[in-house]
Image 1 (cartoon, rainbow, N blue to C red):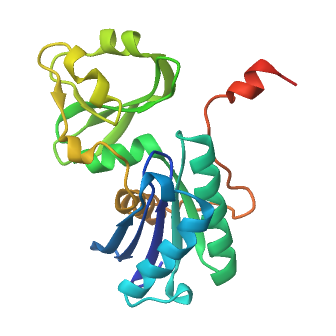
Image 2 (image 1 turned 30 degrees about the horizontal axis):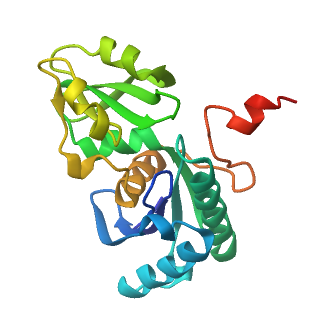
Length: 232
């Protein structure tokens, strides 16, 4: 790994998709621009024009991009398929490397928590949550205490301990049910965003992690409703 890398980052796991362009090297990561899509624009037809606009605003061309970062799940089945497919097509077209990251870990990056226990959550429907728990050190270093799991909302609320920090879109509905002394990260940081996808991917890239373009697929963590009704 040498010099500065240009990163195209894609987040399409939730209600609003986003794309971001970042420049990164061994010392710094800088977000040049980020575009947030409207909820009715998170489609394959809208994502490609957004990427073109993003690169133009950032004075970059597709060929400038060295790494494509994408959130691979958990999240919306359709959104994840669109994001991963777009990321793979772009990386293949320009010869960039590609790296997929966990959406719940993206939220941990956004939280910027220190010296605490941190829960990140996403809506899994059916009164359930996708959840991940981290132990965060004094300098912000993260260690996974609990891998991605599906848990009933009420069971998750019962697991919370005083001084735990929490982040994620489901808090919009659950905030009034939180036990005392639970600390919510600012609501502006609840939705996963492309900038954090890029920052997390760069962290992993610097440790030597890469994904195979042909093997990278969304991680849904559960079967669809149709698959559960009609198992193979």
